[in-house]
Length: 188
Image (cartoon, rainbow, N blue to C red; front, side, top):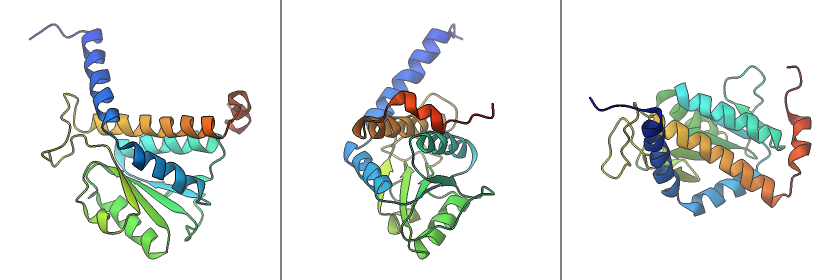
C-alpha cells in the first residue's frame, strides 16, 4: 500500500471538488438565484448526509435574509404556490424527497432539483435542475468519478454550491458582512 498522507488525500479531494464545481452549468445557478429572489419561502428536502448539507445551506441563507425551512422540522409552515422546494438528491430517486417533491408540485409550489441524475422521475415536475454530475449509486456513464466513499463528492459539492450562491447574493445585494451577525444565533 502506498503511503497515504494528509496532503495527498486533501489534494485528491480538492481536485475532485474543483472538477465537480467547474462542471455545474452557470446558467442553472443564475436560475436558482432568480427563483430564490422571486419566492416568498424556500423549502429544502433531502435525507442522510445530503440533508446535513441542506441544513447548513438553509441556515446560511437565513443569515442573509432568505425565509427558508427544512421539510419536517417542527416549525415548518405551509408551502404555497409562491414558494420553492429545493430537492437535494444525487440520484433523484430517493423515496422521501421524491414524494415530497410530488406533493409540493401538486400544491402549486415550484420545485428545483439539485442532483446528478437528469433522467430521474423528478424531471417531469421540476422547473429546472442544477446538475452536479458526480457519481451516484447508479454509476451513470457521464458522471464524474470519485475516489471518496460513496456520494461524499456530491454532498461536499452541494454544500459548496449553497455557500457560493449565498456569497453571490451577498455581493449582488451589497450586504454588509458585519451586519449579517444580527441574524446569527445568539443563544450560544
